[in-house]
Amino acid sequence: MTASPATEVSDASRLRRRLVQQLHAHNHIRSAAVEHAFRTVPRHVFAPEVRLPVSYADDIVPTCHADDGTITSSISAPSLRADMLEAAHPTSQSGTAAEEERRVSPPDKCTRWKVWDPAALPDGLVPYTRSAIEGIKNGELYSETGWPA
Image (cartoon, rainbow, N blue to C red; front, side, top):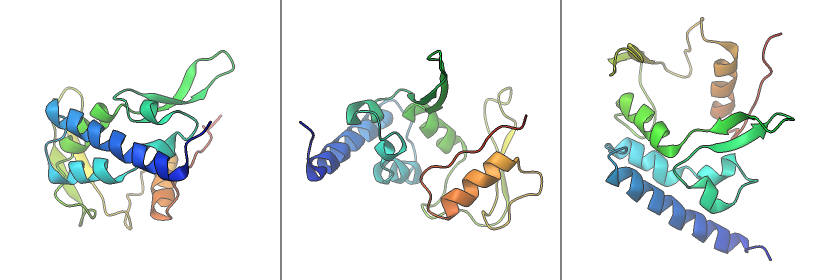
């Protein structure tokens, strides 16, 4: 027996709220902008083939497998995603202004973050990143590209 769409939305909302509480409790969410993102983005739509509790667990969600069962693509664990967003020092819920540069820690992992206006992306941006950003700007929840041979 499958749940009704209304029940599924209610369950997803409850699980999303619980995930936000857990990320706060473990100090992964520290800003209003990151909290807003986690409260409003429905994580389960990025992996519709998995059960809701799996979508909202603080773990990776495999999305593609090779023929031998090896995971070839996944959605990042929410705690990792929150940490990366917090490292970018978000200041608003609606995007960014002009080009901006931020220092991040630890420097042995990444020396800086650069924030670009999505309408003025740099020329050297790798094609799959440009494709993903264009898809997001067009309201696409998912896109994929092949790797060069």
